[in-house]
Structure formats: structure tokens, C-alpha cells
Length: 199
Image 1: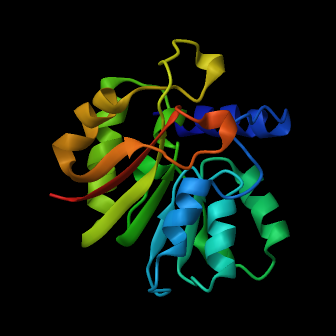
Image 2: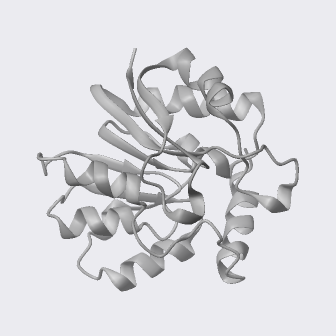
């Protein structure tokens, strides 16, 4: 994956405000999951975080070890403006596929649907997710349950449960992966919520 091209593409999307996936607040399924977390020391990664409302919510709830990643610098700057006390070292301007680290929890907010949907990219995503999790770590998040577009300009790309499991099952164990019961009205029937762990 060409990092420079991805940086340019997503930065332009943010500059043009073509961010239809951005609802302006934490995703309800992820907020509900976050609300039942008790250990505020968890080391958490949110890749492809965009405006990172989930990270902001975690930070406000006392989770101090949250790492926000995006391939575009622009949303990270906006996040820092909204959260001036958030540690700059935990704002990661880099390509997820090149990132190294170990995390207790990785939150997926339709990040999978953002990059070009080749088998290579998607298998690499699943493999790299597994490599970033601690032995007891979890990948938890939301995937779009929508038709897979073949238009590069209509990202995020979609998929369905069986398609996602084709990639995820190879490197991760499925704890649960079902349709969201608590999506916002505009996304009812179009989201999957999943919990995955190391094999």
C-alpha cells in the first residue's frame, strides 16, 4: 500500500469535508462496549481513527493509555485542538500496516472498509491486527454490512459477515460477530459488531 498516496487521498477527503462516515460523536455500539470496561490502564489502539470521537470519550472516562492513529495528519490536529491535554506522543501519524506495538484492545471503527479491498490488503490487515494484540488482547469494533463498491471514490468500501470472516478467521478467533442491535437509525441493518481474540 502506497503510504504517500493514502495520505494525500484521505487528507483531501477531510479538506473537502467528504466524510459521510463521520457522525460527530462516538459510535453507539462502541460507546456501549466502552461503558462496560473497568480497567482504565488498558493499552488501546484506534487505527484509522479519523476524528476519533471514541478516543475522546475514552480519554474523558480516564483511559490514559489510548493511542490514536491516522494516515492523515489533519484529523489528528483537529483531535489535538479539541483535546489539548491529550499526550502528543499518543497521536500516531503513520500507516497502520507499518505500525509496531502490543495492545490490550484495538477498536475498529469501519477502518477495514477504508482501504482498497484486495485479498492481499485484507489478509494483511487481519494478520497485522493479530500481531498487534497481546496474547489476551481483543479486536473489537464495527464493520459496515453494505454492498462492496467497486468505485475508488465511494469509500468506505463495504462487505458482509462472510466476506469479513474469510480474512479474519485465518488469524483471529471469533468471540462474537453479529448485526448491531444499537446502531443509529441511519445505519440500522448496515453494521456488524465483532469481538475477536488471538488464536
